[in-house]
Length: 301
Image 1 (spheres, rainbow, N blue to C red):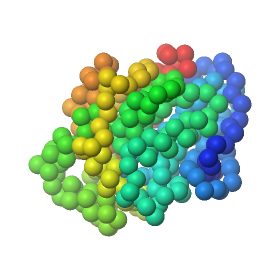
Image 2: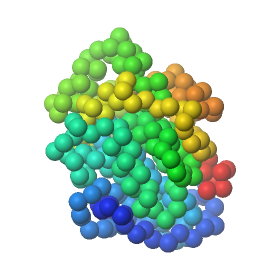
Image 3: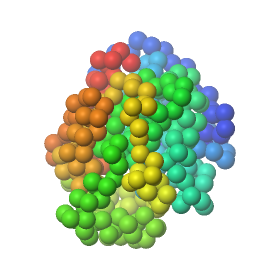
């Protein structure tokens, strides 16, 4: 089981890093870190057993989820690949503070959470965000004194916002859009709706039920921020090296929107065939993780 910790104000102290581990090699076994629970942000962490790359990784989850979604596969994989790997649960999510005031939380609040987690690290990290987490990272990159080694956007909400996605769902899958709105308010939906939203590849029914159990409501305010009120301002952003990834069969953030995001930032989108929105949980998740590791290797991180 992964260790679950909480980042208090001021942050935890992470283990030392030793540079010089070549990426794109067979991953080593990773070790989970444990920290005491305090009022703050939940962080799941995995440290390499051996020498580590100097640059840590910080993962940011999407709507309706929390840090757990990264620890299913990605955190252990990247730790085995030699990276100190951390996933933050944004305020109101998982075991982080603010669950009782979820609907008051804004994208700006989530950006503050990321800054808090980044400042707890000994070096500027690579930020890796999925869906809403990708939008949060884009907004984080607007901040002054933004020190980030690189950024990876996975099936990210585009800088143009959620309107195109919502319009496409309303036309193509109105039942799925209805169920997502129901889940937004804390209602229950059919397991098949989760499968349709997140997965294109086969998934075991028991695992699907477990993911469903872990899902949670999302902030109405944050959804509206991503739709209209607090969209990214690309001209004001710090521009670290950026990797933009998407999935061929994603009904929430279709490949066309991923390509639009990539074009906005002057990079090429990479679309994974046969995959759905939940790229870190899909059967072929390792192809995505391996691509990220090799990209980091090419950057010398």
